[in-house]
Amino acid sequence: MVEVTEVKTKSGTTVYAQGGDRHARDAALDKFLKFYNRDFTIDEQKIIGNIWYNYKTHKGKNLRGQTVAETGTFVGPDAKKFNPTKKKMIDVTFSKDTRGGEYTVVHEMIHAKKFMQGTPGNKHDEKKIDFEAMGRVSKNGLKNIKTGTYFHPSGNKSLAKMKIPNTAKGEIAQKEMMKDRKMLTGSINKSVTGKVAERKADKLYKKSFFNKKRF
Image (cartoon, rainbow, N blue to C red; front, side, top):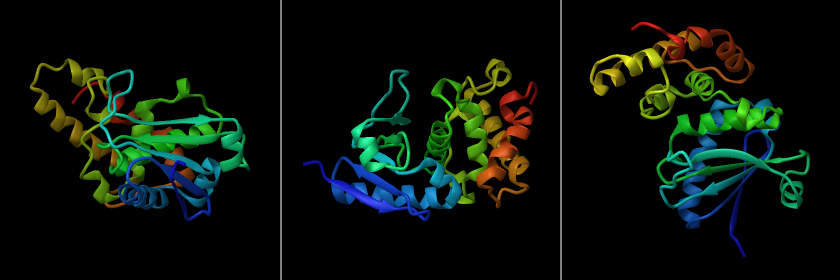
């Protein structure tokens, strides 16, 4: 029988976790809950509903060759059993090198909320999700962001074309990321959640790093 850990969020929803050694899985789940409870409101958590959390012990890769941190949904008897008040259930997977990052957790849970609100995966804008996540994470979480579309060549086409070393491009992306944080929240030290985070991301996205032409 598969061993499953069950924990409650601040909103009363349940996260079901399976995979790996129980002690290590529970430690990872504690981090997930810390970030999830801090960076999402009770109303948002209720929209998302109960979550199935897959704990991976390896450094998995998806079909695009990227490190695995993925969110989707499933339906059927198990969804009805574990998430009875919804028509489907969130299924989130974190590999070894992604599960401890606040930014990654926030990014995936923004996906989760969009799925549960009826937005299909092909309508999710990865850049805009990273922009919104920038407004949600804690000040401490900002220090550990080294991946994502801010640091990918596809993040900003103008920066990608600049004939400067990649280290210099990374430094520019880092500075622009912090500018986006200030634009979303007013300060590096502040963060936003809920409808405020979503509305600000919608309103300010065109002014973000991802759409700039010059640096």
